[in-house]
Length: 342
Image (cartoon, rainbow, N blue to C red; front, side):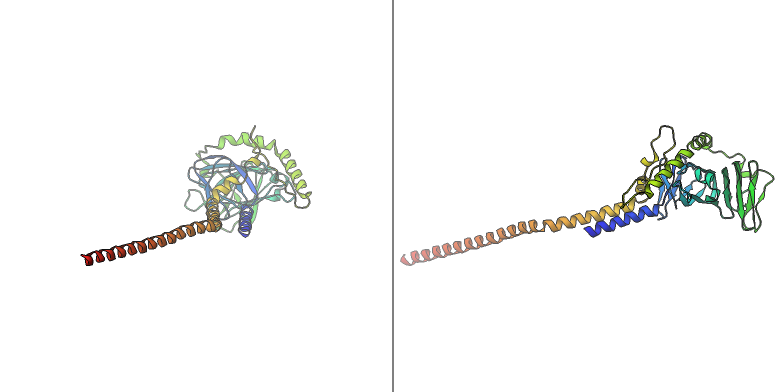
């Protein structure tokens, strides 16, 4: 049993390690969307769920997802989008980083403290280009072949600036410009003369809430980073294996509980339900086996009593049969004597 407990502890530790660092929390969602972990387990997204380093978020044709990142940034996934968190760290230190991939669709990104304090620590990669930032609010779209627009990566800037890079060169995009890196052509990115068609007539149901959320988050960035940095110092100062909870960055809604209250449980329950059920079945089997071993003596004693009673009863029945046979023989002898006298 001890070895079994150690085994499951190692399994749980491996699952938590595989989940990676918290990237952010789902702040709003409409339509359908899923999240897939590094273990290929998928779950439907809902408000309050955490997204982790290594996760892939996929929105359906009717789906939009908005995520508040752990460093106070904001990510808005558009419909028909596949977005992956490649590497993420937000401890308030110099090695914080945000590396993401947009595999399909479109995402609007408003940087948190990581991009604002270290531009090189922010990167968004697409199939045809890499987007870096200089403290910004921008939107990147990946257009696949068959669409009305030319296939490739499109980058538009709402605030600040971005750097769209391919192996052939780069361009710096600012508000009002549309940078483009075509697919299938070994050329440097360039600026479009007009807005791409996919932006015309686009209807986004959650877009109207972004301005207020961004303003609120921006006002919290310094406090968030300072608190996270103090937490990092406390963890570095621990001695002899003392354990301390990682301080949450908060949910950043007015009056909302800290994000520390929204822990890994919802993802572990959603993505590891089958594993948890399997563990429970194994524990049940172990309990049954343990009960069987512990109860064998009692059950054996009961069986011995039953079998003993059965054997004793058989002996009594045999004795009765012998007695009845003897009485019957005596009766027949008396009957024979009587007939002879007659």
